[in-house]
Image (cartoon, rainbow, N blue to C red):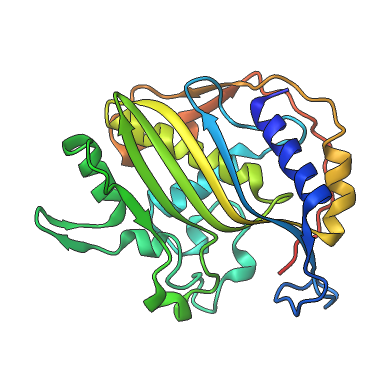
Amino acid sequence: MSYADKVFVQNVKDILQNGVWDTDQNVRPKWKDGTPAHTIKKFCLVNRYDLSKEFPIITLRKTNYKNCIDEILWIWQKKSNKISDLYSHIWDSWAGADGTIGKAYGYQLGVKHKYKEGMFDQVDRVLYDLKNNPASRRILTNLYNHADLSEMNLYPCAYSMTFNVTGNKLNAILNQRSQDMLTANNWNVCQYAVLVHMFAQVSGLEVGEFVHVIADAHIYDRHIPLIKEIIEQKPFDAPKFLIDKNVKDFYDFTIDSFKFENYQCNDKKYNIEVAI
């Protein structure tokens, strides 16, 4: 069993056993048939992953790591809000008539701001500080720009990254306001773990801890049978994560820069209904 498997099982069991239902609330999400999509939730789960020991990918269920890496490159490297720039179709339902998701995610990272050293967008500022000022306690990004929320087709869920260099190790905290534990938990963990590896490599650092803070960790009512089935599946050891060591520039990474050696997992395909 991978460490990520253990964390996932602990999290969902905690939610199912100790969580609080929102069935008495008028909730925004709905199922395709119009029925309110209610959840059982826990407030503020905090999970820590030591990336120097193991890559945090689950084996109880297959994580499509190529698509999740593609999305993180779309947001952080391309700084795009156009769904045509994304290989998968996970954002199609959120696209407007202009083919974008509005001023959300990648758009926010690409906006330049004035610093005393010059103009930087949020990504380039992180890269600059990791190389030139690694002792800084101000290396962070924030996608939750209140001034632009009305022009976002979806408010950002994973909205803030804080980077901290300790010795020669790059640590990071991902703050997430909300998470659907079945469809998005390991997806987000994998892609932001990859992001930490990327920033560390191009900055001459080693990877350290990745901490994932989830304010509202929930399971949808119709997902409970699938969750219970998945955590009973046979687990495997974590695969070996390989990153192309020849890449020295953050913007030179591609999907093919990353490989998972001996990724064994339960490859059963689940028919998962998504709340919108």
